[in-house]
Length: 397
Ligand code: ADP
Image (cartoon, rainbow, N blue to C red; front, side, top):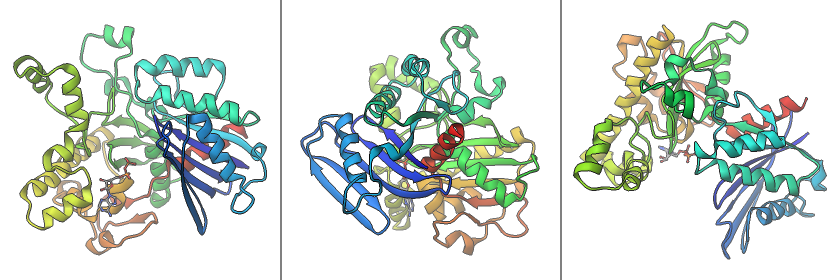
């Protein structure tokens, strides 16, 4: 069955057509600069890639163009659009309303709309993607997969902030977390390494390190704590986000240094993190410069790893044990140096990384721990699109 996965942003749209249940990707691509005269559409299928610049007015036109490529006589992969049976949409914020994947109805759309206040940069665009797909693929079942859903299992002691409780009760102010689709996908794959698929005793920490970074403590398949919070700013040091920061700094910037709230928000989300520390948010650059002796870059790498180590310590306590840590996303999958920095001097937890396994580059899931490591150290490539397709397929069958 053909499942089309759509991840709709402000001026871009990622797509992937996946044949389920055999999980094979038929085609995928990206449409960038939607709204511009020189929009760009990329289309890939096995052994073939094309990209084209053309004016694309809006998201509807973007999906129509994508559909033409999917149906192209020469290199297309489907005969007509009605063979797409399900469209799975990534929706960033499901608030407290959605703890699992749902078929999209009018009521679901209204709830996604009402959650726009919690995710003003993402939910309106995800909703737009849904409405456009409903028109372009009117025969397909539309399904929403929420980035927050996997994290709805957090207990109240983990998600509530210690501020007057009326803010939670009246305004839904609490930790929600993000990257849930990725954490779910890699933690399920990790079960295979633990050979405990059918025995529910597993204590995992998944570490998603991309441009955005987050960690989740997962007990018996359920998330019990998570490093992001009300928004995507909390927790780890990220490409351009500071992560955890003393709130007094924010008020000092506003009250004493005269920054506006908007400017401070911008600094913390777009000018901080690895970018603020080193001038680059690309870990490859930072690693190269650190190797060449740049002290800012060396320190930034140490700071980044130190923050992750602290969360590993905290989550091991929250889990009351540890079976495995899982590295994923661009940095987690590819940076042997970051994995090494995180895992070194972890004798207290008995974590032992195997240096030669850590250095190997591979696109496969792998165990990089030594045989005597008390907990496994795993690298598992994330695949959010496949997870969306799996969940969308599951609810329709
Ligand atoms: P996004 O959150 O945008 O999906 P990714 O998961 O693609 O981000 O991760 C992007 C990060 O991964 C960047 O900091 C990039 O430098 C880093 N990265 C990608 N490949 C490597 C590599 N081979 N070595 C070190 N870092 C890498």
